[in-house]
Image 1 (tube, rainbow, N blue to C red):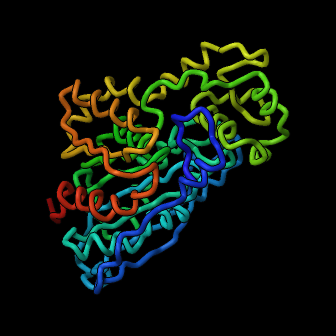
Image 2 (image 1 turned 60 degrees about the vertical axis):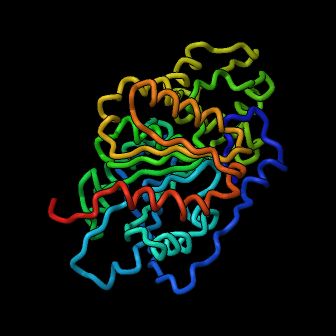
Length: 351
């Protein structure tokens, strides 16, 4: 299940609905991709206060002809998962490798897909740099790319790299894709959370007390889904190394009063708050695409990013398709996302 950050309440029924994903029909005769599970050590994540392992699980999907043509190099697409799931769980939700095999069989050029695991003790690192969580933004944009380029036959240049993410991963794609645009050639943002400032998210004094009563970050697994999500956001955006064992500052105090200085930190991490600082880099993208299901609560968040990009004169496509937060994401991967990168990444060697 993935975290729909726009909602202030997280019902069990809604959470269960988020795992319902439909699979595109299998393409008859589609050549098989090869899936590898590797670990990448991160110095950027070492020493984080949560104790999250710096040895990160990464799933790599190699195109069908990777092993047949030993002299060929391939573009790479980095794909970021949502809150409360791992990269392995996300491959099941988006039905990889079958959806990649289907895209390749229907004419999308072969490319390498890389899915890093960003789940942590609070259920998700929000692809940010933080002393509490470790520097996941730097891990994705620097260390992971360098590790993949060293291990596989990639085309190791920005115009041959793509970045995509969904939900929390959509935020990660917008965050890293904007702040580190020099590392990628094309960007696809799916149902992103956290584009607009979140405010205090309706936190109450009772919820703050419930969180602060925890004896460890690991004990947050006993919290309601939404409250645990707020701890994840706080760990990423308002870390406090002087406040063990959770190492976070929440945007509401024990009396229920809003803490404006913490809300300001959260606001600074909203994509729309920092976009203007990186416009010159974002203009260099070959293409940017955004999409969201028409029954998703994140329609307006996605639209806000589209409008903000347009206001800066940055071309981007924006599509609202029939579906919920996750129901048709596998279809989108096969029929839209991978073909988008097939059209907009460089597949040429030696240039």
